Image (cartoon, rainbow, N blue to C red; front, side, top):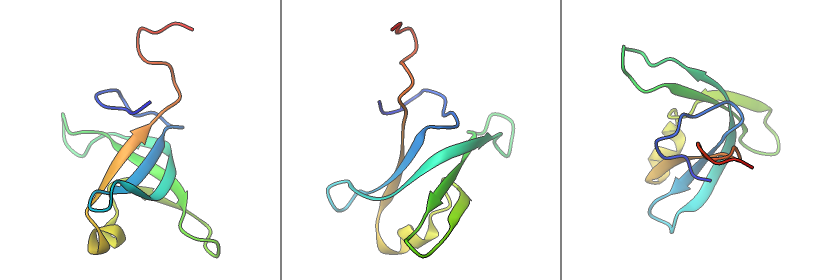
Length: 90
């Protein structure tokens, strides 16, 4: 399920997609912490745990800290969850 206006929670997935290349997935990470925004009323800042390649260890970073991708592509961060939608009972 794609998160739109729902609150992001630890355990959700962050997908980095290339908007110029048919929404190709460039990178995936898991949200491990959601930090308060920097000012009152600012959006929360999800922190993501991910692994960049087969030789690197895991990396923790703010989900919007994607300088590397911005150099090479127009990217967007999309969040996904497997939690039930609000108001849906199983």
